[in-house]
Image (cartoon, rainbow, N blue to C red; front, side, top):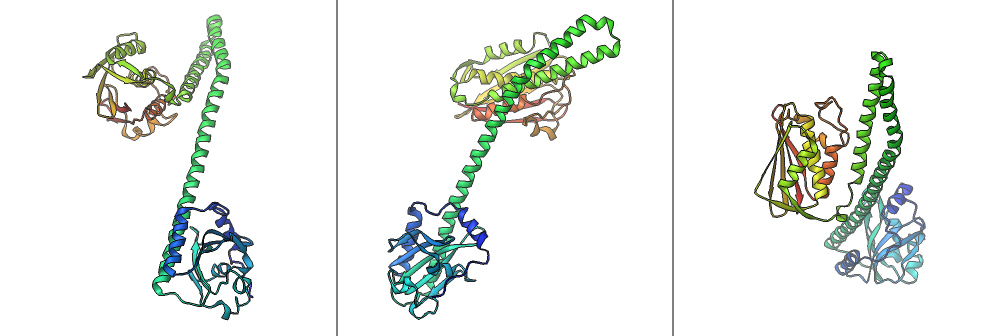
Length: 400
């Protein structure tokens, strides 16, 4: 008996085989049906999906055989994976010097005829075979050989599909864990920073109140810079905290939102001066949604329009319509507009279109990222339409 040699890329081959996580798994109906089909087409009592492990051949699927594995040194399939072609056939093992005294030939299951189509991984490495076995010498027709090759490819398609699903699931879990870790870190870091930051701001204010008259211009400028930087950091921390709180909206309850009342209340909340005018354009008197989240969306959009306005009076028009599945919103302002190159990036965390707002403050780049996150959890989408110098229109939808 001639023992099979190891494949010339054995370590890579074994690694590829293990990447499928298929060894020692339960039988699967999809693969078993293809194994049975191979047996039917080739008219053989035995058909196997055999995978060559380090020291054994293990049967993922089997027809006409009760054992689940055999020693690799006895395996016809271990010879097949070393063949240059994709098909290996032994018409009469009793007359073949490699197999005539093989225990699998001389004893049960009496492998006299063997034909195997090689199963190749997505890295083009042989993992095993789809083989058919008979207890007497015989041949296969060209159609039977081609059918066996085709079925082998379908089996590999199934294994590759299941492998890709498993990889996607693993990546999804890893991404979810990373997102959770990031949000947890943002929350903890923001909370831990708030206390010392409050002390810094208080100290800066106290210095300004007690010693401003005793300091020169440069000294007062330094105190003002400390206070301004502290306020900027406070804005960033508050934004991170709000961003991290946007989670599962299933915990909230929907209720009726009076659109006219909400518009007026938000207008008063955002500005108590006469520099903001918000008008409502809608045939809907009310909608059913999550009031807290809708308020967050509109406050961010209205506030941005006011902060970045280049007009003495900021004009904002809120339009609300609906279709069978969503409420549709448009927030249009008379501001300076947003350059086209920023239309996508302004919804990314920490990204802004303008360096400073009308009051000289630098934006945190968190507001619109939060808006996008809320809307997507609402089952909706958001985009901006704008030309520089002609105001901006934010279009968004939320699922009913």
